[in-house]
Amino acid sequence: MKPRVAPPNPEYLKFLSPFETRIRELALTTRELVLVEAPNSTELIYDAYNAVATGYSFTGRPSDAFIHIAVYARWVNVGFNRGSELDDPQGALQGSGRWIRHIRIADPGDLEKPMVRAFVKAAVARAVRPDPPVGKSPTSKSTVRAVYPKRRRPLIPPR
Image 1 (tube, helix red, strand yellow):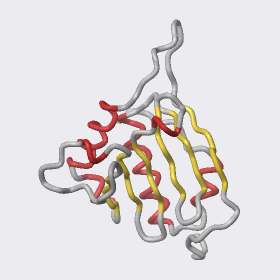
Image 2 (cartoon, helix red, strand yellow; image 1 turned 180 degrees about the horizontal axis):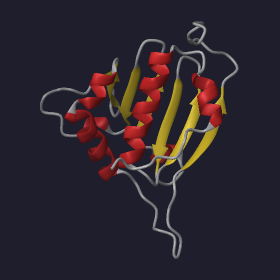
Image 3 (tube, one colour; image 1 turned 180 degrees about the vertical axis):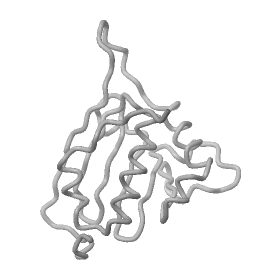
């Protein structure tokens, strides 16, 4: 049985509406994969200049985000905020910066590759976590962190 994931924030769905159906579905499926592996994380949503971005943190602080999803006009990236520290002997992670690495998700089959889930699990395992609250079970929550007035994203009408 597949674990249940909280439905996306309505504003997140609104931010995704200019994208083609295929890209919206990739974004939501990628989101589901992350939340299945990090069910108690906080989703930090950004309607940014050239992408709709979502960071995931167990503390709610952007600086503690361990994974992010960036939705672009033709693909979705699942990014690892400390990806340079992840074991990647086959060189599957893209990026050359000091910390961040990502995997491009261009079609649903990309999410079926076992290495994608393995990297997500590795990032979750390394994430900063707060002390658990006493008497409360942790739950996921979603927060819209920023909406940028200028955007450089698809002008493609939704299908």
